[in-house]
Amino acid sequence: MKIKTILTLRFTVIFTGILLFFSLSVYYFSALYRKNDFYGRILNRAYATAHYVLDADTVSQQQHALDQRLYFQMLPREVVKVFDQNQNLIFSEGEETVEVPPRLLELLKKEGEVHMEKGDRQMVGMRYLHRGQVHFVFASSIDLYNLSKLYHLRTLLITGFVMAMIIVVLCGMAFSRAALNPFLKVVSEVEKINASDLHRRLSQGDGEDEVALLAKTFNNLLDRLETAFEVQKTFVSNASHELRTPLTAMIGELQVALMNKRQPEEYERVLQSILEDAQLLTQLSNGLLQMVQASSDSSKVQMSELRLDELVWQACGEARKRQPAMMVEVEFTDMPEDENELIIKGNEALLLIATVNVLENAGKFSGQNKTISASIEVKPKNLVLRVRDRGIGMAPEDVRKVFVPFFRAENVRDISGHGIGLPLAEKIIQLHKGSIAVYSQLNQGTEVTITLPKLYEVFKI
Image (cartoon, rainbow, N blue to C red; front, side):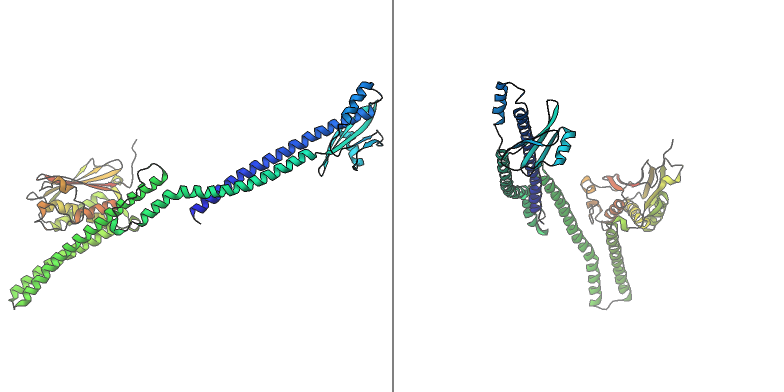
């Protein structure tokens, strides 16, 4: 069911309930007031009958004439009856037959006054004391005038309710259409956006209402999608270029070697060159696979408890294998007494790759001074690893791009590499809910800071 239909139905149901409650309340209280008011009028008729019938021989002639005038102001279809204390009928007047059951007389002896309703006819009985004797006076009538007015009121309320329902349904449809028009406009604009024009944005993102909030949220999603598409496009382009370069070199050398017969030494040189290019391809392929693994869902990566200092020592040994001339000095800032403060939770293989990449980059770009310093700082909630070199450094505009896959600064073009070490490290650190930052100055060196959350937090008193 469409939201427009749901809104119309809900609007109609709510208004119907309110209108129905109002109509029933008006009719109920009007009928209740009419009934109670007419009971009062009938009671007055009973008193007028008692005065006229029973008090005629005890009052003055003038008072009796007044009682007579009041008695003859009859109600519509009125019937009056007077009984003595022995329940004998002593006076009756009225064209219609109205029976007074004996049980009603017995009830009247106890209560003193009773009200009774039979169909449209209302009856009032009262106990009246005359010359020391108890009499029972009954008066009944039908409120023809007010019942007719109540009937017309009921007809008016029903007719008004039906007309109001028709108006409510039409207004509800118009209201729901007007309320959903901004959303329909958003849907129309979204349908026009495809992969080739992700730069387009929704026009309603400048307001302050809920539709504007939805448009802003969708525009932010489009921003992220556009960025992801651009990164993917750049990644594919750079990866294709990096893969094509060694393949082209290998094919060229093989074609040249096969053009003429060569000496065994020449073939050996060609094979050695091809082996080096194949090793570069293997490193690049492994790096791409590792980036895919680092970009996966953290819930799918197996985590375990690790000591950061042991991980750093292991990474230093691995980095020295790749950069034999590199020297790494490891130091601790405020070494904790409790070893639990050095424990993190993570995937050992991925964190080792990230740390080795950072150390290898520091050794690769350190120039003539191959001494690298690595320090571990223990903070209340985090562990911080800082890796510093005193090498060639980078310009500020290059520092901002170091985490873009395959990006390489201008001053390191002649140093072998693929530009995926730091981007891979960033993805791995983010996968472990940490952060990585690079600070560098040209010809003064570079510092890479890795921050990882501790597994335990020790409170000391």
